Image (cartoon, rainbow, N blue to C red; front, side, top):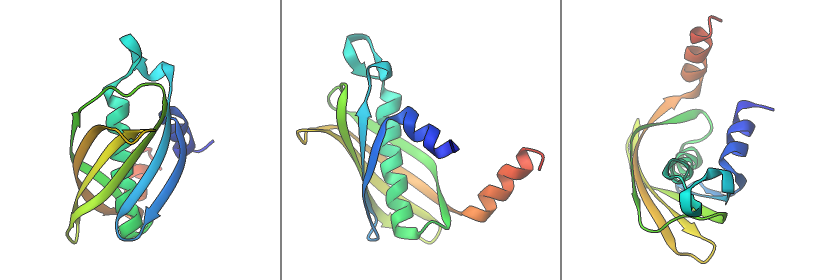
Length: 140
C-alpha cells in the first residue's frame, strides 16, 4: 500500500467526488468512532485535515499534478460537532498568485449543515523539487 493510500485510509476517505479545473474539489469521508473523543465528537485535527485536504485537492485541480500544495497557514473555525458517519469536505480557490494561493473550504454533514470552515495560504511547489528533497532526506 502506498503512503497516500495509508493516509487516505487513516483519514477515512470514501472518494474524491469532484476536482474542477477552476479550482474546486469535493472529498467524501467516513468519520469513524476511533476518530472521536468523549461524547462521540470527531477530534478537531481530523476535521482540520479533511478541510485541508479538500483545499489541497482544489489547488491540484487548478494547477495540475506537477505541483505539491504545501500549507503555509491553516485556520479552522468549528461551528458544530462532527459525528460518526459521512461528511463532505469542499475546497475552492479564493485568490491565486504565481507561487501562492489563498484557499477556503468547509466541512458539511450529510444534510448539508456546515460543521467547520477553513482558510489556507498554500505554497505551490514543483513536485520534482519536493521528491528530490525527500530522497535526499532519506539519504538517497
